[in-house]
Length: 243
Ligand SMILES: C[S@@+](CC[C@H](N)C(=O)[O-])C[C@H]1O[C@@H](n2cnc3c(N)ncnc32)[C@H](O)[C@@H]1O
Image (cartoon, rainbow, N blue to C red; front, side):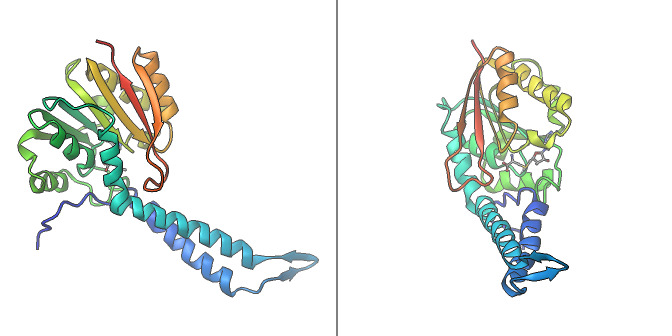
């Protein structure tokens, strides 16, 4: 039976799986191994070592699961609250995945339009595909105002100054090669309209994004996402292009 509720998928599913895959056996070893092991003249303490490692990994896994199940909806709402919406904006979501921010932004820009670009990597997002995102757009009732395009962020063909608002969450760190990542940032600056705003969230490299945007003449602020429901902790770069 087809899902009747949108499914925004599991971010980096292998990371989540590995936290439990290693965390649970480590914790069990930590509970059941002997407290001391002597090898030659060396005294090992395997129990606390495995116990604390296992507990740490499991805790990370649970926090991550919480982000995937509900935290990311709250992070989306927080990100979108950082901009005062008129309602008629043209919005671009860079690395839209299964449409989390794209759909949120399309609802805010009720008389505007929203475009999501992605390469649909299944390593970065479970069940990632254009069809899965289109299904979410239909279920959320915003399909008529949204366009999905398969393309890498660093190769955007949009004309200069196409978008009032550009959003992106947890995408750019997946571009491992710095010059290519810088190219993607440069494209985002290029396609943003004068007076437009970018909201770019990630768990690392936000300093690099901020520096790039500043260097391109944008006014930049950087803030932490709300604590507790983001894991790993996320920061948001807010960049305004002068009119
Ligand atoms: C962790 S997911 C986050 C998806 C979505 N932004 C969200 O918050 O739910 C990262 C997304 O970035 C996409 N991505 C990775 N590298 C990309 C690139 N070079 N250009 C466009 N999208 C990319 C992946 O396919 C994936 O959908």
